[in-house]
Length: 67
Image (cartoon, rainbow, N blue to C red; front, side):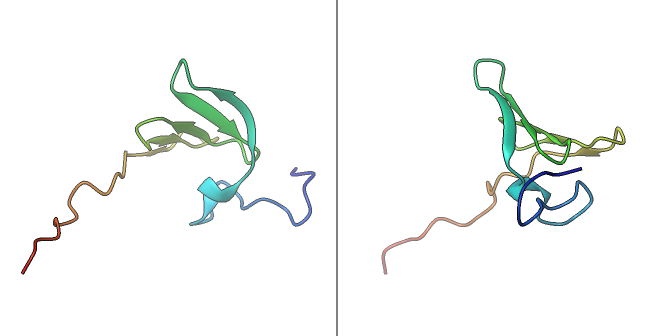
């Protein structure tokens, strides 16, 4: 259970990445959030129930060109 006020989003919430960081290991490329989600440097996620969220970097955004 989250001790923060207001509580952090749950691991199943769409905004789960907004939970507070409990442990951060940048040298290993991951952080543990308050809601139990492991957030990886490549934006992939491991959920507490073993589910995965594939990396979701905005790499398909078109580049702006000068007119």
